[in-house]
Image 1 (cartoon, rainbow, N blue to C red):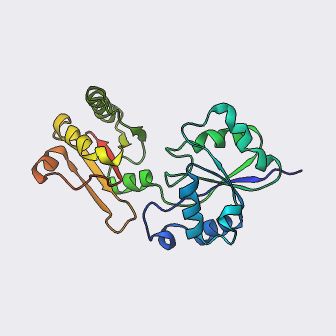
Image 2: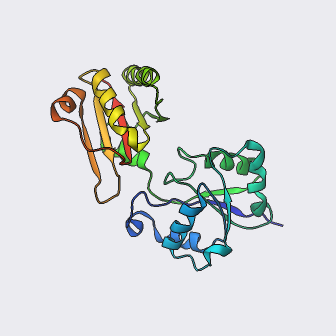
Length: 237
């Protein structure tokens, strides 16, 4: 029996943007599938309904993979693929496998000889980098910064030093309700000449991207970031 294909299915980053961010091919493939591995079943069903799946939502095989999934449980998630079913991997992060626990399943799929097919869709990380003016030839995504003040300060200083030494862009995100605290820490502790990009609600109706030096940010005042998905990019000269 031939193995199925693991399709990496992107999802919109903002409401009412489906037609502008997902190509017809990706939507067409998603509509054919009845087996999925998802980060959150409730959200996945909402997205599949939005995609226009012709299948009854309650009839779909949705298996959960999140940060709490143990490595020993990953093999069971591949069972439909090994039985010949194509499977869609969906996450809460826009693009599966990028800043997303789905990467663990992708690695195991490769190890088991299963074809992995990434589909085109929006990545807030790449969109922020594109709009930042920072070095797109060399960059690093660092995920979430520590919530503890001391550890967060140490991380900010390490990222700024690394950016300056390696001539690379440093990207990171924060839980939206802590955006204001992170922004304040960046302005307080970074060099005035360091460039900081703030990319808020990318692809959404209130998308807003601004890139300028920390000194200019201090003069300009705080943007509205509370509870709004945001990507930060540091570039130290």
